Image (cartoon, rainbow, N blue to C red; front, side, top):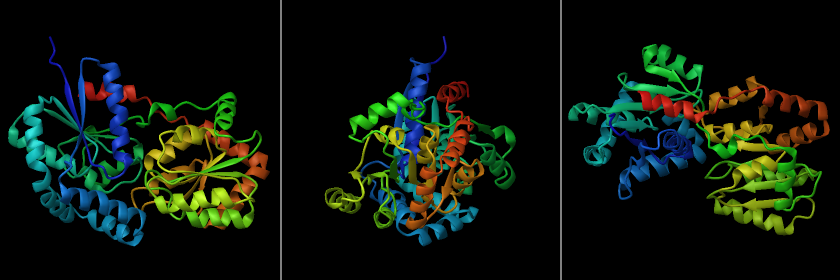
Length: 378
């Protein structure tokens, strides 16, 4: 009789791009192997103030508001000496709890979803001399910091050939250590909305039939410069409705709610943090986003043309290049130019249909069950 498998999925709360794939894979493993147990573990416990401040809050501030600082952090962190220093600084705040968790949980497998936790887990396992399998899921699809592949003894799962080539050619891993897997995207984003479904959703949210709708969304922290973009739309007196998802950005939410009440030229609907983004994407005709890994794939899977107005230096560059290379969207930063492009697409039916045809030809593999079988076999 085979031993019951107990998985610990380690993540850090530095954006949903790490946690969301962990949740998707957890669901898939539990569906395919009901006897297996999967536990999501935050690498920083709640009272770990150093970890929470420097690796969660600082990350969010730098990547969203201080892009120059983020560029500097990203470029410096690609040096192995800097990576080693960071891991040594972080270890005291993780290693004791991590070691205790491994010893008491009965874990047979550990999957890491963050480059900071992977080498620390590997170090603990070597010291314990336990036969526990360690795998790392690299959550950046196309471009990523070298820190993901710091420990060359670990097995890595990546989402693209570009990522595997980077690991082998730039980071010195052997090809057998890196496996390409399907994208880990939540089920609700994997179904292409039918015309009937779109009609139902527009009725649900009070949009008239035949009205074009543009969604602005930037993930949990909202869309950077959303106010500026919407103001440009107002100046253009655009002939389409706007949905603005502001996430945790209360200042932008308050501003959009004010416009929602006062604007007579443009129909605006404002939301804070939502758990129905899949429905808002489905009923939209075009989506304006910051190019996070999960967000871009969730939009493309529902076959919606995308305009990227912002991306994080380095790790999200590949998402932009993928979008442009496959002719399914655009990278435009200035609000007035975004408005012009959307108006052009909505008035030029042949151009819009080309984008839709390109989206239909993407054929993105999102079968999480394949990944579940893989991690269960490792």
